[in-house]
Image (tube, rainbow, N blue to C red; front, top):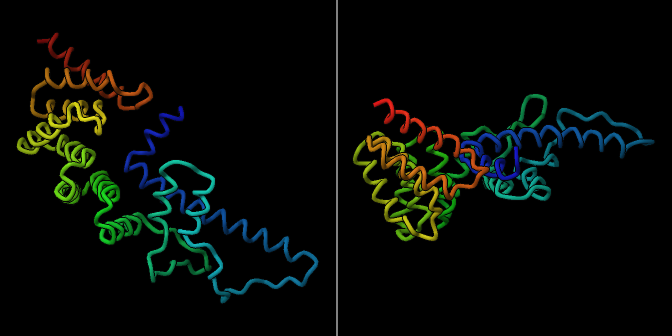
Amino acid sequence: MSQQSFVNWIRQPASIVLVIAFVIMFLMLTDQSQQQEGMSSSQAGKTTIAPSMDTPSAAMPLPGDLAGKKSQVMGGELPRIVQRLGSPAPGSTASSKPDGRLTAPDLGSLLGRLEDKVKAEPNNVSNRLLLAQTYNELGLVDKSLQEVRAAVKQFPDHSRAKLVLASILSKRKNEAELKEAVGILKELQGDTDAKQYLVEMYLGDAWIRMGDHQSAKKSWKLALEGMPVSDNRRAKLEKGIAGIVAGNSGG
């Protein structure tokens, strides 16, 4: 996988949620192993004291600490998201297993922390859109639409907020919502703050669900013209266009 393909994949909300849980769990396990090795080497030549099950674990890094360490060696968007979602909420304590090992927070906990951040910083439109996209990827479409509509209402001139709303609506089956998506996307055509290949891609998605295959083909072709060659969505659009052409030939 090329670097650009990996970047495109990791920006998908579903990928972010899955990677967050994996990274935190992996880091917690490896950090505990490193701590045990460091303790053994530092006490070489001294009287060795077996660790007690009652020994406080306050010195053991929490998920937020691990995410912070990871962000020092990784670049891009993932470390910031891990740090935002993995940091312990104020006043909370990390859960642990009977053997004293810390457990990684589940996806529900991570989602809850993002919800808390949105409540605490209602003017942070990036967090609000991330929450809306995460809801959508988890199948909570009604909550997703509620969140993104609130963002658009609060920031009516925010092109990305409108694009996220249209992207969700373009996958719906309700005709009124599909027409709303088309209206928003037509407004975004030519908007330099919105990636035009995404505008055309979502337009095609809406057109195909409305039964307008020729408009869908036209929009998808425009999307392919501007879409990076490494974008893994190209194959899906090419397949959709080929299906429309084959259908016309068969008729």
